[in-house]
Structure formats: structure tokens, C-alpha cells
Image (cartoon, rainbow, N blue to C red; front, side):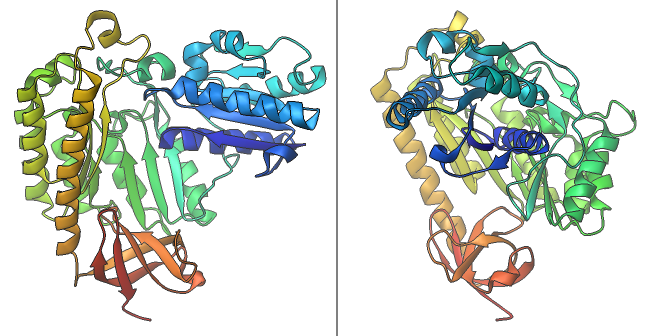
Length: 443
């Protein structure tokens, strides 16, 4: 029996797919990249952004057409946030689904798939399992990691923030902390099997407090991971600005393995919009935090998330987003036009009153400004020598390698395949808007 997992969405979804892959292989399945060769196809969905549901149903339609052409079809399972959010509504729109499994039930996937296989694909009503399981532990060594150099390690699942625009608390559930002993064992196993970088995952990753050790907060977790032999780099995503404490700043400054990069989502440059979004911090507080980070670490690279066109956003509010972007000078940015999401406070109580064409104008202006800033920051890197952790071949040229700086900037340079998984000193020779070019100092 062969399986194929298709993943939409964030790093948490990618890691969930790694977990499901490990569970399926433990149950005797083998991986395939060919959908026509798969006995089981799992679609792991995301519902954070607009049209996520339509993306799923378009894919289900393609699988249904493939089944018609082939005369048989694989068992199809839908997992992830859209599965949790839509539940039985998925079955009303598509008859191509055999299993619908929620975000907090992934450990039950092999059992549910086995039941569907025994019944035959499409031969019986789909199995739906959305009942939450609060146990966040996961069997050590089961995860089938997709990256040989970098390993995701979940430390928190769920979120208690309830930002007005965000669907995550409704699809991922309330905040649950993973025991620190299990986190350290997971990280140790990842390093022992080749990983050189650990990325800690959580909806509000820096809100971590170990349930099995009252003395271990997020800063203490970073300190403990920093002692792991063989581990070169530690990253984490995504923190909330209001939970970035002086202890965390000190840990980032003092611990050599913690990367000098912080993804610090702000969402808007307007304090009025931040209040409407229920972010619970102001523009002024955010700017003070950025100043404290840069005072402690002048070389830190900051990235962010930004939403334009949120309910009630005026031109003045948007101009404040532009001015914050110009003042902070982010190394990278994920920016989106606001779209209503199911179950959220914004959908229930606010009017999506910014016209679509105005949202488009604003996103184009913001992305244009950010592109200019990134180009300037990247140009300043030319001539510097950067330690680059090589993680893959370049996407465009077979003879090039690709890796990232501590600040999370992609660098492409000529090198040998055996360098993958090692840190190479690279002199930066050129800059593109989204990456750097360089040459190995030792080649």
C-alpha cells in the first residue's frame, strides 16, 4: 500500500504531514510521489487565508476525474484546518472523500484509513473524527522528516489569543503545552539522525511554559536546547510581540545557537486597527520592542506579517502601516489582503467595508515599499562573509547550493553536494530582492 500526502499552509501543517507520514509508514505504508500510484491520498489543509476551501474542493474534483479515467480511485482523507472547520459540509460538496480527520486527532489516522480500506474507497459513508484529543505527546522516532538538515519540533499546539481576524483558535483549539522532557528528546533524536537546525513551532511559540517543569519558560527552553551537542542553529515561529520578554531578548543575545532572526507579526501599523484586531499591543509598544531588540542585537533581522484592508481601515490607518514598514525596515514580510474567515469575531461583529479594488491598491503599495527595503538591505550585504548552513541544491541551477544565513536570508553559491548539511563561509557577491548570491571562501 502506498500513500501520498499533499500539504497546504504553514510550517505547522508541514510538520503535521511529517507526523502523518511517520504514522502511516509505521502502519506499513510506503511513500509515493505519483498520485496514480497511490492507494491513499491525504490532503492536509489550511484555512487561514481566503479561498482555502475552494482550493480543497478543486483538488477533490481533480481526484474524482482521475478516478473516472483510471476506473478506480484511492482512499482519500482530508485533514487539517479546513477538515476541522468544515466537517460534514465537505461531504455535502464532494463524494470523493473517505475520511475527514481533525487537527487534534492525527494519531488516529492509520485506524480510520484501515477502516476505509476494508470497506473500499467510496463504498461506504465517510468516517469523520473531529472530537478533540488534548494529549499533545507524540511517539519518539515516528515522524518522517522531509528535510535532512532542518527539523521541526512542536512545543505548543492551539492558541488562546483570539485575534479578531484569525481562525486558528477555532481550528487548532485552546493552547496546550508539550512537556519539556519530550521536546528535548525529540530534538536530541532529530540531531542524532542528521538535523543541524531545530525550528520550534507553536501558534504563540514564545508563550511556552513547561507543564512538567515550572522553572522552564521559553527562554529556559532555548537555554537547554543550546547545550545539545551537534546542534548548530535554533529558530522558532511564530512569537507574539506582547510575549517577547527581556529574558527572551537576553537569551537570543547570549546563546550562540539561537539565530539572529525574529519573525515578529504586527499585522498593522495603526494602533486603532491593532485594537480592532484584538492584538493587545499598540504601535508604540511594538516600536519600543523593536528598539530593545536592536539595542541588544544590532545585527538582528526582523520579518513580519501584515494585513491591509481590515474592517474599518481608513487611508490614514494604511499610511501608518506604510510608515511603520519604512521605520522598522523588515528583512522580509508576508502581506495579505483581509478576507473574512469562518467563526471569527471580525466576521460576526464587523463589516468588511474596504472595497476589493482599494485592498488591491494598498497591497501593491505595501509590497512595493517592502521590495525596495529588501533590495537596499540585501545590497548592503555585498562584500560581507556570512556563515551559511547549506540545506539543498539551488532550485534554478544544479551546480549551485542553497542555504540560509543566521538572519534567514537565502544565499545561492557554487559548491559541492557533500557540503549539504554543513556550515560554509560565503562571501556575498550579489543581491536579488529575495535572495543573495555568493562564493565560498574556501572553494
